[in-house]
Image (cartoon, rainbow, N blue to C red; front, top):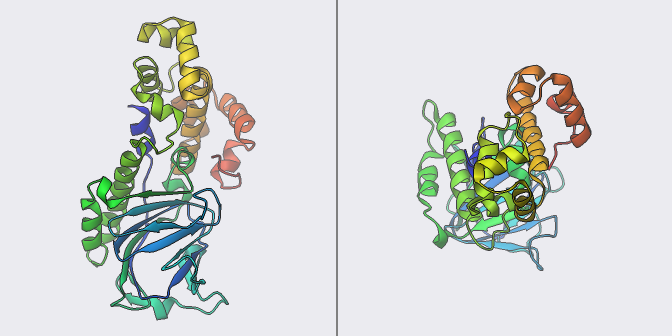
Length: 320
């Protein structure tokens, strides 16, 4: 398994929140649900997304046009509107509770039928929205690799999954929730794979190093078997270079030494297993390359500032 496949193996939607929004201007929706990740696929007209974190562009608001897909990383709040100047008229709270800015309930008023939502069933703006509501459904490794907001333009990729999601999202058939969860996962993976391959994506160092003839194979070996007792000498021998050459090249391309990267990979996988499975701490430790639960606990608390048990219970601040 390569580093990208390992990263994209993470999304597992479970009862994700999906809907088709139809809106007439003026409209503006303030998103305060604090969900870990949301996809917005623009079908018709346009929208402007303004994250609270001013790290996107000088004017903050980013236009999303027909065929474009935006990925917004939580838990920061943001606004989606017909125009950046339009004041919020709807606020989405945790649990997808919908109100006016002053707190009046809007859930019934905005309900347009099965997974249809908006202020006008014939509105000019149509978008598909998929929200990962559970933090464990999207790994922290994936979230840490993403900017606050990314937009994939419709003319830069094959958007056939958006068309398929648009057909399925309004159906009410047996097993439909599972179908939509899997479609959302596929759409996210397709968008991220395309985005990460772009020269301007500011992809993490490990991704840029993937194509290197020396560091790339080393990364693939680490991801294929993180539980192996790797050393720099063994990695170097397997890729056919000296220990010093691998260490220097790895640190330059990835941004950290091989063993530091391996530690981060092991602890990230441990965090995912703690949140997503019922495996015992001993089993998690063995799987990610720590001899005992105590050794994993010590490393985990040193790096993340919280014990594995408290992290599993949701009492620790997720890393990334």
